[in-house]
Length: 285
Image (cartoon, rainbow, N blue to C red; front, side, top):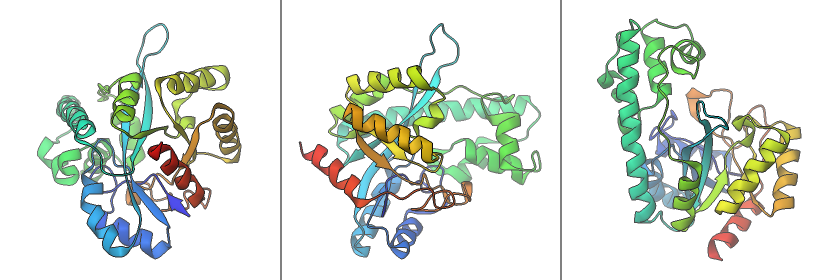
């Protein structure tokens, strides 16, 4: 069993890279990918620890992109997973640094919106939790800690989510730009948790065909949000269109306590080692 979708404290997880390596080793995972949001810092820290523990560690990252909606309106968010089977080259690392700057600008705007809404919060408070990769989960924790909300979900529903009063739209790269950057740097691009995109039937299939033409090589079939019918659907699409299959728990530790490393939500994720072998073949081609 492997897990190709996990997060550490370098982005929005609660396990440090060391804690995640130890947990994966204790669980008996045959391989692990760290796929923090818009940063390689967690992987870089974990790499020597994984080598010492004898755990195969894959260099990964999760990138948020936007997909314009027909007729205008707020762009649809589409996440990509990228995997590199040597080291992430300087080309992709430089591109990611640009995305990090846009994240910082959004966080400053989010603080301003919350202040305007009567919430006493500073960027330094959020930085203390999220370090260089602050995100909305860290804002939610501050709101909960200060008593503005009763749960983390309420923080998103009232303030931070797309319908929240303090929501700030992300200026993510376009889907085409991100696929081109990943594949052009020698990585494998996989469509992350497609069920979350919110498209169905013909529209969903059209999107998948579109990203395949851009060079995307894989689709995440196994995920904690995918019920059996979703796994069957995306597995059949992958087989029909010639995609490789990826999968993982999307583990965040305490920020998603219902999702377990390796096995997902109530055991609904089981990713076989053979999928990793196929990805390695593509990377070598």
